[in-house]
Image (cartoon, one colour):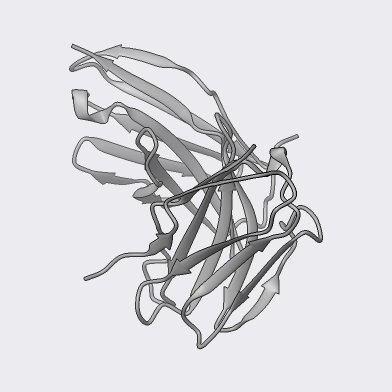
Length: 108
Length: 114
């Protein structure tokens, strides 16, 4: 079983729609959780950290359920510029473990 | 300010040759990480430095891979006797020991072994 699992997609979503990504992780001792975004042939960039209380940044909402070892990302009112691969990332001690990513394409 | 830089941006080499990849982290960042990403795959952790020491080398795929960091700054990843399966994008990231817990990635070195 992979340490971090994501649906690889692709998700093809019309502009303005809401899209949700899910992720599960296997190590219950994991300490920190993130969503990164990676554009084609570019490096990953932090989108947002994920907290147990849930957190929101504009159109983006992230949730963490430690009991279920489950992380989610919700994107509302999707824009063309949201097209990218979204990486679920878990940190244990100093090491980041990345999911393989979910590819999102926003369709005009 | 300047971000993480890596050189070269692209490297094409012949099977069996040695290659050296360089990473310049963000100034003042104490932690430095190497990852690789093969085509269509997720990021694979290779090695982590805290200062000049490497407490976690668990991700290095074979003894052909080695890395060092000097002066708590620049790091080099060396691959000896390259194989075709070494072809990937090698990404470096650095992190400050602050509350944000964020790793900042460089643009990567795309390695192609012919």
